[in-house]
View 1: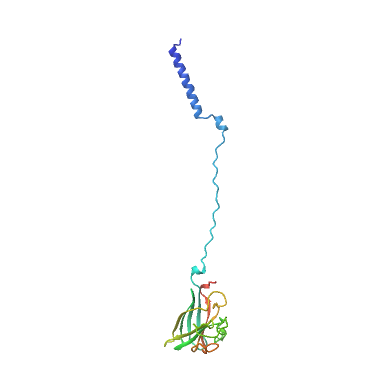
View 2 (view 1 turned 180 degrees about the vertical axis):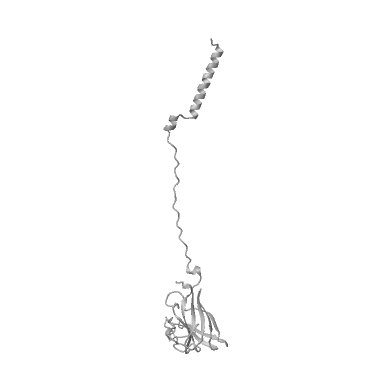
Length: 217
């Protein structure tokens, strides 16, 4: 026979079992609930195409100043040789010449219209380079051929050097460009006044002006 105390214990135990069962159901959903729930998916992040980077090509200015060079070779019966370099600078073209095998004294020094040294006496180089049809004059004259570079003076050993900035000629493609022209050294001084070429005498050396390094502009 159940006593009131026994009945109370049974009631409490039953209530405790029911509470535990409900708590477990809340924490662990049923298999049916799991089956009904959609599977969570992760949305992939958008992909981006790689950015194309074009190579940077240095400009001629960045690579250095424009330069040209003429290697002088002797005409028939002479021993004159040398190198003339032309370098673009802010206010013109720097002309630097080093020549050997000359007789002591001054020698006419000019750019001629053709880069052709094939004739034994270099007459194949034509007349002075004169695209603006000016009279012959000194290198620093207001009126002069573009090819008028005055005189270069040799010492007792026959060596001559010249370094100056020419404000008329250019190394850039155009009317006044000396690229492809000829450099001539003469036997006598240029008197800087006689027309059409200063009475400088025979041609003792000739060279063709070519772009240094093959650059173009």
